[in-house]
Length: 296
Ligand SMILES: *[C@@H]1O[C@H](CO)[C@@H](O)[C@H](O)[C@H]1NC(C)=O
Ligand SMILES: *[C@@H]1O[C@H](CO)[C@@H](O)[C@H](O)[C@H]1NC(C)=O
Ligand SMILES: *[C@@H]1O[C@H](CO)[C@@H](O)[C@H](O)[C@H]1NC(C)=O
Ligand SMILES: *[C@@H]1O[C@H](CO)[C@@H](O)[C@H](O)[C@H]1NC(C)=O
Ligand SMILES: *[C@@H]1O[C@H](CO)[C@@H](O)[C@H](O)[C@H]1NC(C)=O
Ligand SMILES: *[C@@H]1O[C@H](CO)[C@@H](O)[C@H](O)[C@H]1NC(C)=O
Ligand SMILES: *[C@@H]1O[C@H](CO)[C@@H](O)[C@H](O)[C@H]1NC(C)=O
Image 1 (cartoon, rainbow, N blue to C red):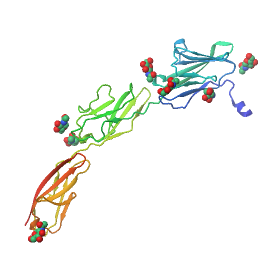
Image 2 (cartoon, rainbow, N blue to C red):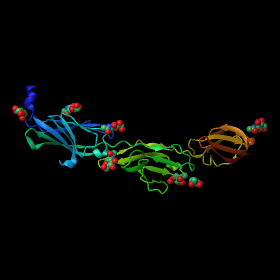
Image 3 (cartoon, helix red, strand yellow):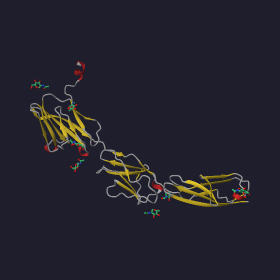
């Protein structure tokens, strides 16, 4: 301990350390004062670097123990006997520098000062949506980035800053994003980013999964004339989210389910009107395409 004592500089600088080092809004922060000189009368904390009455937060007088509040006191600051300052429920307004003036006994004019700059972390925004599985051409989606009034906002769609689109509306301060008459092209991830003087923070992405379709199905190949003994291989496709359920019929009679139809070695009585029906259980829509097959 002798060595440690020997290592201490004789005129150690007053330093201020925030605990925790990172503080987010609504949390508390303690500004710890290290290397306090001895034989003190008291301390005065100021908001900012100007040590005048207007910026005076609070003061601690050691003997007799007295705590005084100044015009810059918000009701959330507490000064301790060891000069540390606790700021509770930190707000954005607490951003900026803090100065402590340490008054030594018999030295009322000069004192020792220490500075600290506080940058509360931005609160992480989040997105709420009235509907994350909207139906195409049916629903209006409103995304909201709430509880972050007063920040600069920015919306991101699929990792790109919001495209200037007449379809997307941002009423008032742009913390609401309205996607009227949603289409499948609005499927994707949406993020909300907020900014202050120091930095920015993005919300977790919210995925809009637009339900649509089925579109009119197509039957492949387009060939209509076959010969007996050939294999008939037809496939049907309709864009749909979620994927459509497929049903094949011939001349109105059920053949099978599934998008692909395979009949080996067809005969003339496989001629007829084939129908592929597609159904999306989420949108409740159903559509059909017909195809005539002639087997000679
Ligand atoms: C000062 O006092 C506060 C409150 O009691 C305490 O949390 C802190 O650890 C003390 N120490 C220093 C170095 O400020
Ligand atoms: C503190 O004050 C006492 C008497 O008032 C004095 O004897 C002592 O040397 C002082 N200590 C320092 C570090 O100034
Ligand atoms: C801090 O905020 C909490 C919850 O909002 C409140 O109950 C408490 O009184 C506040 N404390 C101070 C010192 O403002
Ligand atoms: C910040 O200060 C402004 C102006 O003094 C005040 O209107 C606002 O309510 C304060 N905000 C917070 C979160 O304390
Ligand atoms: C939504 O868009 C579709 C196709 O663009 C259109 O047919 C429909 O009328 C629109 N609905 C509304 C409410 O604007
Ligand atoms: C979606 O985007 C594609 C490619 O830009 C376009 O061809 C198509 O018409 C759009 N569909 C809708 C429903 O807006
Ligand atoms: C095709 O015709 C034969 C008799 O000619 C009959 O036995 C068979 O069931 C028919 N198949 C179909 C799919 O109609």
